[in-house]
Image (cartoon, rainbow, N blue to C red; front, side, top):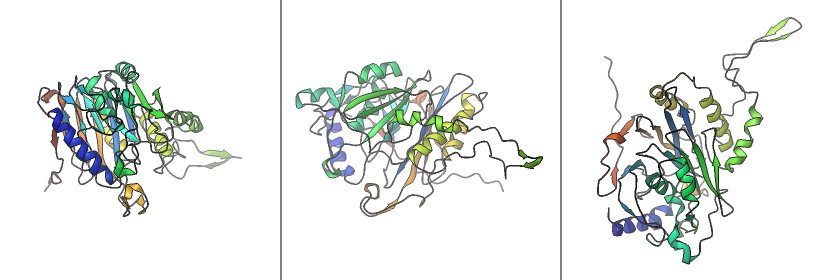
Length: 369
């Protein structure tokens, strides 16, 4: 895809498609699992109140990309040429990734942070060293191979406050989670106009509040364990738990971001250490099921931006399980339980343009009679 075409596509998408809703979701959850064979599996959900119309998006090497500057126009920001190929999910027809993995195993996504995300003040003179918030993940995956490279690279650029006129003249309020092939994890946030990079020993990230505040809440659940509890004995009388599951009794079950953070943390922490990477992909789907929002469980009033001004419901539009050892990127869409698999080892790294693939196949079932 040439520079001029990228400008036209991104400009039209930013000014038209984003009239309806923010870019990332209100209730995303992400995590990383470590295999016994030193591999890693990443999982995340994407929730939204309106159809994102996401497509599987492949970005090849050596492709010119147009950075969005402070004026909101593609090309007036930091333009770059992709060093690494990447695959992931876009949104609303734009040539950007909301989630993805590159050919070096760097994997991650953008998650909504509407209450905290405040980007850097960038003057027009510095616009050419800045990009829009929606471009953060695309920039990271197409430029860097490791977490250390990301840390150094993001210190050198700015994330500007370019606004979307049709979205109340606001920036897309997102933060980013990233994991590399060695299992290093970070969270990148922009808080009060400053870049904040936090090492993430948990591998888990959800939405607001600021990530370091979420880490500080873990100690409140020090009593939680997956080990079943023994009966309580009082003066010789035994009182047994009412059912299995007593070990994680008290685990938050609602859809608030702090609750999902703790739930994801303990569910991933409880996975047997003996599981190899291949087995973890299946395990990740089971964990993601704990965060899948059934239609109607979160209803959005007409005044809510995620309802598009007409009310609606928030759903899990798609889920991802990515194996960055075997370089497999798996997806499941809301419409069916099909699992779509993309093998990066078979990708055309030297294609000449971005490719978009709809994931809209009919439900695949296996007949047993």
